[in-house]
Length: 100
Image (cartoon, rainbow, N blue to C red):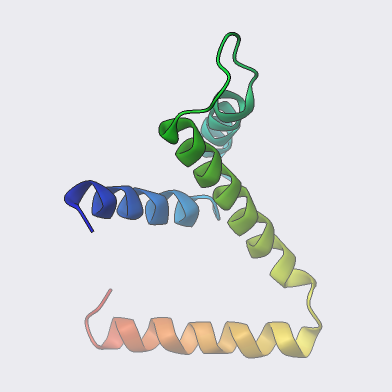
């Protein structure tokens, strides 16, 4: 991968991670603006550019991650608890080993 590819991947990971913050009104507004920019109709332009396609893919991924982050709470209590315990253990282990 090129340096540009790595930077694009890094930004994608940051964006989809931040998408899980559903309480931040500013982030929600920014996501909504990016959605509008990505999916608004463009006059006189037939084929979308690579940049347009990347923008669309990124914003769709952000919304999918956000939906899955919220939807996991709708699982059966035992499944929800099992996965949240595993997450807690992983985060605690990372903290204790200095990977905070």
